[in-house]
Each structure stands twice: as C-alpha cells, then as structure tokens.
Amino acid sequence: MEIAAISTVSVAPQSRQPSNTLSRKLGSVSSLTLPSIEREHRVGKSTRLRVSAASSSSMDAVTAEKISPASFLDKREESRKVVHFVKYHGLGNDFILVDNRDSSEPKVTQEQAAKLCDRNFGVGADGVIFAMPGVNGADYTMRIFNSDGSEPEMCGNGVRCFARFIAELENLQGKHSFTMHTGAGLIVPEIQDDGQVKVDMGIPILKAQDVPTKLPGTKGEAVVQAELVVDGVSWNVTCVSMGNPHCITFGTKGGPNLKVDDLNLPEIGPKFEHHEMFPARTNTEFVEVLSRSHLKMRVWERGAGATLACGTGACALVVAAVLEGRANRKCTVDLPGGPLEIEWRQEDNHIYMTGPAEAVFYGSALL
Image (cartoon, rainbow, N blue to C red; front, top):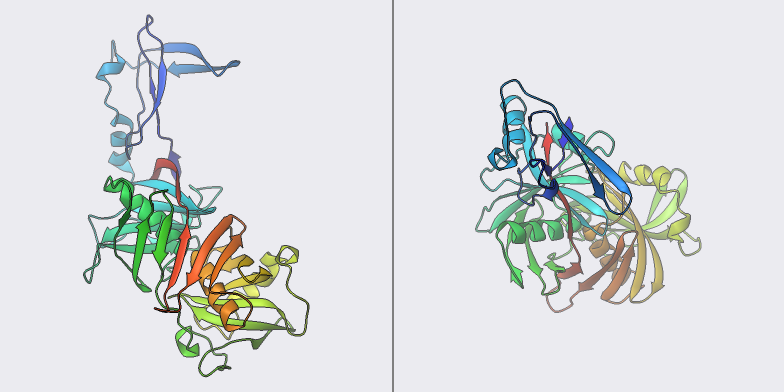
C-alpha cells in the first residue's frame, strides 16, 4: 500500500516564482509531467528546495495553468483503488475518516483497514471510521474498524471525530447536533460554539450477561468490585457496557491504591482483554483516584491495544467510581492524551462526555 501526499507543486515559466499549495479538498492531488525544468527556492531562512520535472516526448511546452489538479489522482485511479480520507484525533486517539455517505457498504475492507492503520506501512491510526447514510431515522450511521481489522460497536473519541467530520462535510458553522446510528444504538453529538463536542452517550449497561461477562453479579445482576484473577493476581473489578464492554479496576484485592504510571500496560492489558470471563473480549481501564472529582486512567482497548484516550472507557470508569463510592457523578478524567469532562446525570441516567476533536491532515491512500 502506498500513501499519496496531497501537496501540489506548480512550476511556472522562468520569469515567475514557483509555489507550493496545499489543497483542502479531498482528492486534489497533482503529479506533473513536464519538460525538463529545475528550479531552486527557499523554504524558511536557510533551507533550499530543489524542484525538478522530467521531460516528456509528448509535451513540447507546458504551463502550470494548463495542468489539471487531479491529473495525478486520475492516473493512479486507472490501475489502483484510491480512498480519500481526513485524519482526526481526539486527545491522541486517532482515526482515518472516510466519506461513505453514498453507500451503505464500507469503501475499505477490514483487511485494508488494518493495513491503513499500520503506523509503519500505512497512514497510521487506531481505527478507520465511515460516515454512512442514516438508518432507523438517524441522520447518519457510523461504523468503525479497529487497527486489527475487528469491528467494535462504537467508540467515544471516534464519535467526536465523526461529528467534526460531518460538520466539515456539510459546512456546518457554530452549534449543531445530529443523530447517529451505531452498533451501540443511537448517539447524539452536539458541536459546541468553542469547537468541542458534547455527546449524549446514553444509559450505561450493568447487567452482567449484557456487558457481557461471565463474572457473577455482586450487586443484584451488576458486577461491582468483584474478584478477577489475572495471571495469579486477584484484582477488584467493576464491569460496565457503554454499548461496548469495559472492565474497570482501581487496584488489586487488598493492595494499595493503583498508580497507573507504574503499570506495565503492554504486559497486563492483553491478559484482561482475552480473559475467559469476557466472551466478547473487553476494554480495560486502570484508574487512579486523585480526588472525588478528578480521576486518572490508562486504557487497553480491545482490538487496538494501548491508546492515548478512550471516550467510552472514561464514561464507564466514572460509572464504576460512583458505584464503588469513590467519586462524584461529574468528574474530570485525565487520559494520556488529555482530559475529558464526564457527567452521569441522576435525573435521566444518561452519561455526557465533552472533549475535543481535531483534524490532522487530508490525504489519499492507494489500497
């Protein structure tokens, strides 16, 4: 798989200065076949950039004005499938967003998604998200493939990125909200005036078999501060689903309060994810309580591994902290990528998440 850069180099006649322009429109990628021209110009104060174009027997003279901006992409599309995308991140949890509004089938297969997410041989991301036509009365449908090619029900940080992506596609300005159909049900994001995204994440699921977990309920049918033996060590865990499964722990049984920075996450994370008590695997949040309104977490995500942020995980851990009597219903959650504001409202039992989402770059990838 190759990645096509999205800069356009315009080479002008000798009397004019060459220029570099970055197109923000998806697919505006150029490659020029020109007479032999070589030009040197400055980038910054000291660096010089040499631009060369090889000659072509079929072209006696070419000017920049006659070159189609899409000529490079058109040629590539003749022989290879191209997907256009925008890269977004929510607190470092990064995604490749694809405009899929013209089809109810993803433009990228799960195998191709895994290749795109590869940070050495692809674009690099924690997942590929598709903006698709709405179903069941929703404005849009969101589907996501993880970096390992698996498909989760939904993703909290991905929802915020999705919302900003839709706002750009539809040219929405200011405060807006819309409905999204996901594998976890209906989600309602609202873009705030400051650009942050507030998301109604719905009602947490606590019934053990619906999380799902094979651990027996400890508070009715809910699994709260249950014992889970992982690699010979007993951990206290609470299990919550936000449409996707989460196992939250504040430390080992009888042990000191957890210091999340001391964890060997790559070693312990997979053992939780693939534990036999979680038939659909699980996301795992390791939590340190800083105060009743301030929590710190590290996360091992099912299908993605250690990530810088997990929106559904932040929501799930606040639910767990409230159920265990460790925190208030409104908390700041510090993730490796930055903070999220989480509120579990008593009046409607819904969880609300507020945080940023930012575009990183626009591009096209050859599949």
